[in-house]
Image 1 (tube, rainbow, N blue to C red):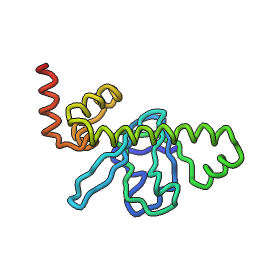
Image 2: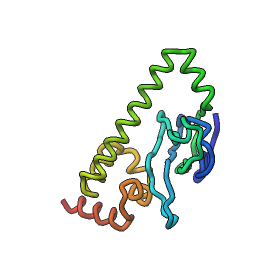
Image 3: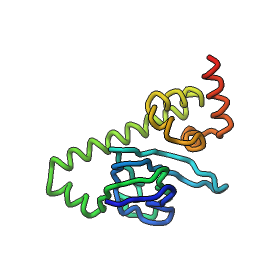
Image 4: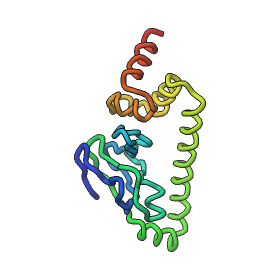
Length: 164
């Protein structure tokens, strides 16, 4: 069990993602930084959720992403080789973890489709519906980054929704 303060880094670009992380309490974000030093949030993980840079973790290659505590966090972490050992020696664990990973890929596919098919307002409405707790816990800047819009545009969307 490990604890991280707000803004504590669990992974930074260039490092190999050694751990698959389970959130006991708090909130983590997985994000990329573009050439203009702008953060782009890809995923949030809160209580009872897993997070990792899948590419770096499974390929044991340098990460292009960061994992950071948005709130103070308590987490459990399992190392790559230990996870592979569990997969091999405990079929039930392998099956359960496969289900976790399949759900993550479904979420990712849904998110990509939303980003290419939905307006920013529709994406925000879906975020509110799917993650009502996060709307209360996260600053607007973090949500805007996740939705691929500016904080100012998110404020306009919120005002428009309130007027409806």
